[in-house]
Length: 104
Image 1 (tube, rainbow, N blue to C red):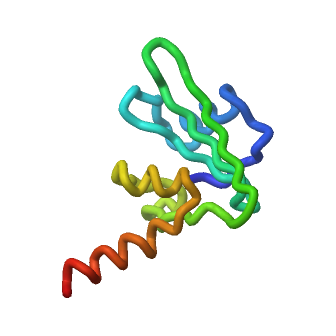
Image 2: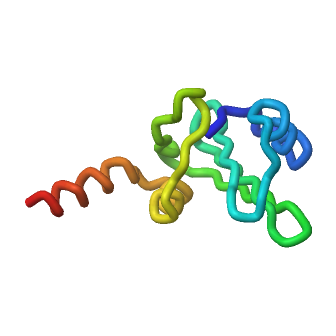
Image 3: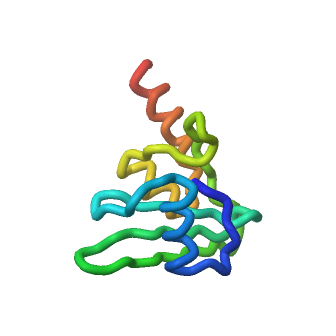
């Protein structure tokens, strides 16, 4: 996750990936950017021979962000966590509740 100016589009967001992280976007990963207020989320993803930019804005609440790795802005999410994040669900609490059920 990376807090970013939500006016950025393809080139600006891809520039963050290459300049800040020293990476190139491959087809099996997505880069998620969140606005300062936490209500807008953008996902940059490579599909086939092009890039796709998804935008999601919550009308109420904020996106619940996972804790980051040591660099403070990247993390790896399982597909279920990624889906809950995009939906604006509090996926951290859901994961804790599921773990409590397994332990019981």
